Length: 395
Ligand code: PLP
Image (cartoon, rainbow, N blue to C red; front, side, top):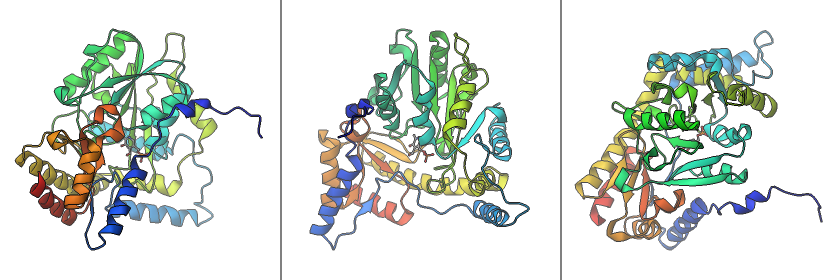
């Protein structure tokens, strides 16, 4: 028997049985009813292929890697300058000032969200609920003290700092939100920035779904005055450009983020990345750069538009049937209240049994998700239209 000690905080993690349980129930249903066509509206993964401009940039980069004169070894840990500059220019086109030197390229927003705890000490962490489970689990793994900010239909699943008492927190915000699709407007986000500045808190802002925003909502927390003194922003090419399988993301840690004891968060993150991360492959970074070019943004927007038309169709059907829901306007997620007081799992079984649609029970995103359900717009148009027609027959 080994005598080593392990990180016992892992024992405090809630069992993540959501997707395995969904898989189990779907398999059992299919075995019992092989003739029925099951439509999956539960996936949080993209389904459309990469934009042509991205593919040709990656092909060109792969060819360069096969030639002695243009071959490259380890990439810089913080990302190639060409991509950091392209990300800075992307912000600039949105009217936001982000210095290329404050951008850290990585292989995914999930990695950055999970790894950021490495540079933070024993703070109280404020996590909205329901939300993307990685915020919670990464802090549980570190043994951090966690407080939940429970959101509800009453606040449109957009928690506000008005319920807080001025305590210093590390605050996670995801806007547009996964799973609720709820999106902060400028005034809502400003409340958070003001709270963080007054209380000496840090905001970790996850903008993975910013490309889905339609309407006058902030795409970046740095659109809010003062955010450069209290916020780290994490964004991803995954949903914006279909990079879930290609892997590329970035984190902005502004030079201006300093603690009262004189630590620069940017220096800490730079040190952390240089020690534990060896960069993103050159062809992937060239693909990401192409996704942010003028042509790339247009081609990627067409992918987003396709999903958003699916979202519109789902949302329209729910409105027609008087089902309370958020999302679908600025996000590929639609978050609905289960009819007749059903729990998320009961509604899951009902949808599978009666109309062969698979979604995600809200319980999978925290207790505050009980009685709610997430549908996603990442399916094909054909499947989404069929699902919408089926949904209407039972709502
Ligand atoms: N942040 C949120 C809110 C997400 O929903 C996801 C993926 O579903 C991620 C981050 C992970 O993104 P990436 O694919 O860049 O790791």
